[in-house]
Figure 1 (cartoon, helix red, strand yellow):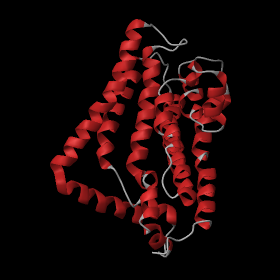
Figure 2 (cartoon, helix red, strand yellow):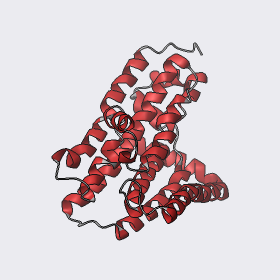
Figure 3 (cartoon, helix red, strand yellow):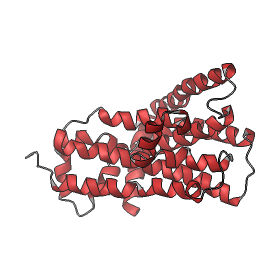
Figure 4 (cartoon, helix red, strand yellow):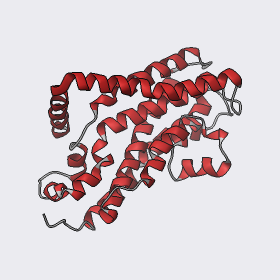
Amino acid sequence: MKLFIKYMKILLKSQLQYRTSFILICLVQFFVPFLVFSSIYFMFQRFTNIAGWSFYEVLLCFGIIHIDFSISQCFVRGFESFSNLIVNGDFDRILVRPRGTVIQVLGSRFEFTRVGRLIQSIIILIWAIINVSIDWNLLKAIILILMVISGIFVFTGIFILTATLCFWTIQGLEIGNIFTHGGREMAQYPLGIYKKWVKNFFTYIIPFGCVNYYPLMYLVNKDSFNILHIISPLFGILFIIPCLLIWKIGVRHYKSTGS
């Protein structure tokens, strides 16, 4: 953890060397997702609900998923751009250092400018919480926090899986964007509005349903009491385990660039 924090301090200091550029990018990151939010807002001006989900219930999904994505992009950017380490031969140097590959790849790059997107997502989430009809208690507050944590782990796992493909393909594959950027766009709505096979795939294979659908059904009382809905965010957190195992397999099969 000390090494990770040291990486953060170094990269934050380097990015703040160009303060104007840093601030402008943060502002852009704040306003770009606003266009997506606007599309949701105007859609609900025409339709009162989507498959039984109200505007503020959808905003809960929107806020949580975009918070998760923003934090993941900030702190897991090293895996998202991992192909550059392979192409440049930098991963060879990582392998000979007396630290784990995961912590070194994580620390190779941070995108602190994503704080703009994060701030906007937090504002929308707070707005939704204030206006949505939920009988809040300690358990529901804990579940909401776990939903955020679970989403971070799910996006991190997807970034790790996408990076692992680079051991065989060298260059990063756009297929990873289907589950990162595409997953973000899809999971900003409750999965129940999609076809059954889509909901099942993004529950049992890529567990976005454990982040924003089943626990949300408990929060807004959309279904009868089900203990699985309450603990489902924990399954999303556990998604990181097979992703790390696959990463280790990829590292063992890595062929040096010879640089």
